[in-house]
Image 1 (cartoon, rainbow over the protein chains, first blue to last red):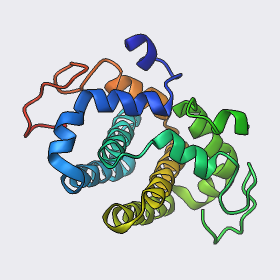
Image 2 (image 1 turned 45 degrees about the vertical axis):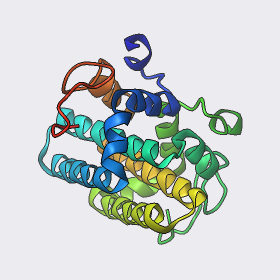
Image 3 (image 1 turned 90 degrees about the vertical axis):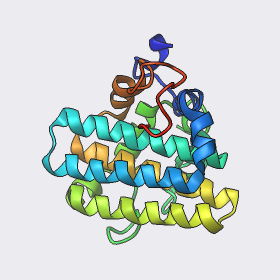
Length: 108
Length: 108
């Protein structure tokens, strides 16, 4: 598996599956609410790393947030790859362009 | 681009690049702090969708959180694919296994 996940060619779907294989049993037992708390803790750690951390620490916290997001998606039965393809695969959801031309004040 | 991003074969790196191409200019102008506020707003919308939303709404909110996470990574100069490969590419960061054997109370 390391030959897949050790490269930058990992797909979003593969990463979600990796996290599913690694943790699903525990994740389902914990449920969405309990898992969301873990996500929030990691988001807090990311904020801290962005303010005061080294680039290596930031990188680790981004990975953790992504892992917990994948975890919740697993428990909720949401396919992350399909989710981003639907929302962003045809361009910005606001203006429809691949280089966004929405007004600055508008999302996103 | 839709033939790449409209499938489930999108890599994490490709998604981060898509978001970079789409929004980087605005993102850099907004900075990490301002962008983090947007991420938090989307996390709140995800929580709401998980509690009361349809599966389609949940999917859309997962996509938005992932997009804002990629946005902050772009501004912070962090490669998400490298981040997850380093942290999870050799197994669970806790026990080193591809199916986690950490005690339930332990992270993750």
